[in-house]
Image (cartoon, rainbow, N blue to C red):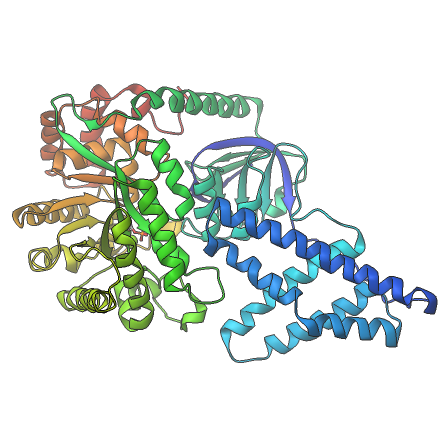
Length: 585
Ligand code: PEP
Ligand code: MG
């Protein structure tokens, strides 16, 4: 049986299914004999201490492997656990009512959750999920169930309705060969963490839990976003061949790791990596990136309970800049709103969030929050080669207001004698049709353009990028998008600026050749794609790519553009870059 979801993290994995479910921990209301009360209280203290030890070690591991921001949720769990009232209330109940520790503890936590659920403030209501998490952890210790989160003891494909990003961060990479969820999108935090950790994943696979039996075989295709349950032998062999081929490709691509992305006739292209979390820098370096072309900084603001401080952001940006130095790092300022909302910032319901308070609009509505980020970026800028760009700009006033806030942040730092790079380059993402058509005006205030083709496609074609029902129509090769890209490149170059592309399109070898031929100066993509795109660029002549781009731009439909690409590229690129990723041959 085949399911189609959203390709969330590249790679393929086949293995027995492990259903990942929130277990129901059965707690019985029993009384404790008088002589056993103190022992029951000791058991409770021991469970608290063990939970404390679990949480501290998880927190440290996540801070080490991912980031301090990611680890923060565990800090909150530790605070819940350390609440003196919790200890007092549960002890009282065990002593006075002679109830067993698990029952007394659950009753107390249920009361706390109910009180939180009834309050108006959204950020407090969200805490009830944390209360439940802590409750489960302590109960597992009290009831003798120590493994957390559930860990399969053999290689498996994990299938869940949903999985918390912090749990993805804990998954054993050697055991979990892939995971599938029923909800979520490519930009869900769990998908982002999966990509960062290199675990193949498919999300939004509706109804799969109804069919997925524990132990049955599941085959996950994180490129195509498909999952097969009980695949036949042929499919299993097919997947194994693909995995071997990807591994071989990775090995052979290592030989060009230190080489530049230069065409056969000597035209150089900058290749940047897209990262979401500071911990992904190591991978960017190992795949031979010339820099970070897109650092999606908004992930600092998500999945946490309160605003990240300026200091925390400064440390994280500094760390990325130092490790990438002397390679450039483009920090995209917070692209919140749309599908990336932080409820503690007072996110409100919007009918069309992608057309709502998103990107630079969001930042300008929260000038204090934005200011802290800008100060952190400027402070970090002396530790490497930083650039900054704004997301989703749709008119000149937004750009000017953002630049003014940069000026104010610089002035504050200057007055306080804080080191910063006053000449930090400021660019903008071109991802709205209005930005395309006002590019000449915007170019007067910016130093570079980075085209966000994910959003530019969605806004140009009026097609929701996350709507799986439109996936066959959502197409960056649509002539309307290509003409927008061409206009942006020509306008940027006329103003003396470099122009990059950092949407997913840049990570496809064929599309990358098209963009090269169109005159793009820089491409930024997921780490997995970078060596493949580099290999493609090193296999072609620039003049051939230009000829292909000229012809592609004359086509009336995306299908005809694709035919031109196939015709040229099939003869130019190594076969493994041309074959569809689905094809093992
Ligand atoms: C884009 O829109 O192409 C882009 C790179 O930004 P994001 O995917 O984060 O919206
Ligand atoms: Mg975008």
